[in-house]
Length: 367
Image 1: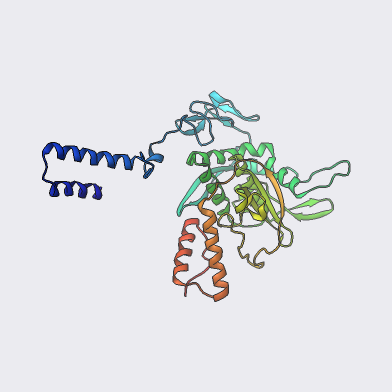
Image 2: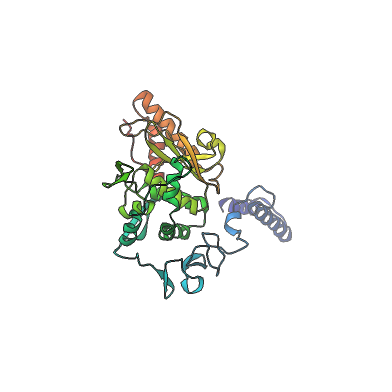
């Protein structure tokens, strides 16, 4: 408003004209300002995003106000996805109680807190998990039986973990919570990614039989939540489920030389890994989308090309979103420290900003 006031003062102090002319000049001056700031000439368009309204009222899952969601028992009410069992019914195997759906697996509940970072601010989601269902899903075999000489693939086992029908009913409430935080689809993806990255890394102490061999037990996605820990493949399964249910195309990258898995989220080809159309997402800890130059403890960097498997088709992560340039900044910082053994003052400031923005673990310190 400073420019507006100084313009008025200039007119008053420097023109000796009639009141009618002064009024006319002032009116024209104000009209020009209004046109400029309303974007009438296409020069300034400050208010577009604030004043534009959607043509239809929807919730974070895309459902219309006062309509049932595609996921029972939810409906859309004034921008929030809410339980509406009386109106929308219950999933198979659940019983209606008042306006909610309950399951026989709702035994020994415990509340977990799922942390996430979004543009430098830290949050957490409270979520209830049930020992009854964790016990059920842990007993669902991970083995796959083939006929007619078909061979198993890594993707088959991945889909078996993600597609388990009963598990979906118990994981969808977390998807709904994410959709209730924001209707911005890219922020929904950011929240899901950060939630999984912030689940502590850890292997199960269980084992299972595969043929005549004893192998390490691989958790289902729900078990990762219940145990609040998981290894790379297990956390990748959980994130693939969440992103797929949020509508995104998903894939995974497997590095056989390192026995490491990472998620792929559909994105512009120019930003994707190996021009696959899917961007690299590390799941073992906080990291920036497309940053595949991370140094792993005891392994170092992933120098070989991974095997690539598509899980689902869907929405693509956006064109030109800030993660792509931020990942390149961090990669350049790593390259500088490897060459010079230190970070200069400017790069340290850049790194600290990225560290806060994504909740990264502190990799470097300036000298």
